[in-house]
Length: 175
Picture 1: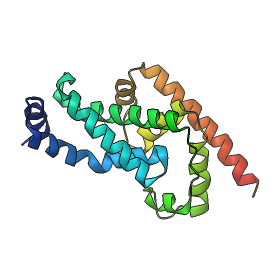
Picture 2 (picture 1 turned 90 degrees about the vertical axis):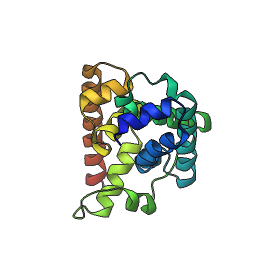
Picture 3 (picture 1 turned 30 degrees about the vertical axis):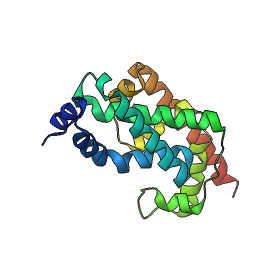
């Protein structure tokens, strides 16, 4: 059964259909949440809260074909609320490096420096970097997800990349 048909069933109150569509998204949701909080337990809490919010508001979804985008938006908002509420700063450790997907040829120290640089970005820059490079979303998809113009997404991506270049170069030259 297609995802759209399953989402439509879920909107009509079919709990099994809702579980099916959530099960297809669970791993992706966890990865995004983990990128924000760098803690397994907190990431699981954020995913659980996201699923709950999606369940109680699935009727508000206007286009079933945008379910993934809608769910990702709920997750990002939940993660941001969690960070604001708890005002937590999480150190990046070796364990978090192992969980990230990246080419095998990249030096672990370089990954650490890059992750620390990403972590130091403002939330709006970190969000576009995560969505673009970890979720492989297009600029248009990111703009739709964040409900902002494509130009804003491009600007934020450009600024984030420039800040990362500066931070990455400083850390590399300081060794």
